[in-house]
Length: 388
Ligand code: PLP
Image (cartoon, rainbow, N blue to C red; front, side):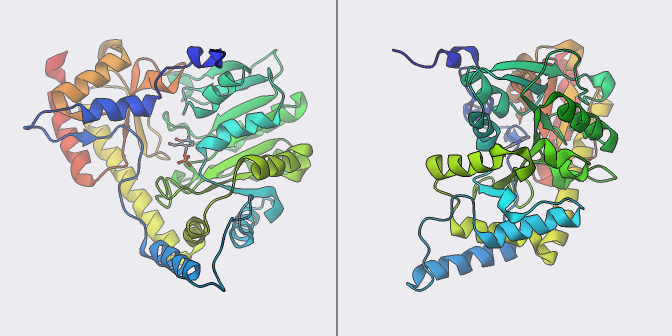
């Protein structure tokens, strides 16, 4: 069959499906399984978000307010609020530069469809793999910009080859590395000079504390060279509801209009109910609850880090991430280590190799869990030493 042979060059099973499968085959009646694997949120939606979505459902029940297909680029009410939030950061982003999407993942690949086949792509690694794999499937030339522990996993522009698309993620999943203003300014200048377009994945921007940019558009010149991809998944807990947005400034030329065309042809929009729920992100009360929730998840990372410290394992020092990224004992293969962690301690984690180049020899623990699970996991980790 004449199928896309590029599928042969990516992992034949998606990393997080594999982890789910491993977890579901775990069968030890004496050990309750602690899921620190897939970075899925565990706490429920905020009351205001539910109320807004129920209100949207009520509108659907009346003929006068019923809504059919949503606008492919999203409802104006949500795009206005998002544009305002950028303007509050000092970034000049207009509502017609914002596209409401069903989360971030699809867009990491969809953006590549605005370009010709065979373009040169640079991908920060280790990182969430969706963008890289979609580009490989499109037959693009993907180079990995491997970041290292000694540089705090911060990516720096390469010398030589010219790239059409550059994928950056800050705070980075899994490393937690967060780029400061200087780091991002270097990238924006590099992109402007070389004619590259940056795809900036800010899915974890709400986890930033301290003086780090939450958006690439806080950097001068970024509206001339960068696309930003955002999500309500890890902030509002919308991994199941699905809503996010992509920003393509008109200063990027055709790309804004092309994405509008793309959405019109390939996507029928995000449901009204989801968008009304997402709108509550901008509600003051929701913001303050969100801050508390993020603090809660970050405290889980601290609980897990203490356990790793006691084991003398290296771990990331980031305080801007819901993930703990750590080194396996004695440089053990990350798949082997994660399997041991499930089988012996009943803890699901993610092998660093699932985050592509530079991830081997590391593992990730997700702090999107209940406090009790973080505490129990850290208690169980005390027993890890006996397996080495
Ligand atoms: N980008 C990064 C860095 C992620 O870690 C994830 C999900 O874990 C996504 C994008 C996808 O998020 P969404 O649920 O919005 O599709």
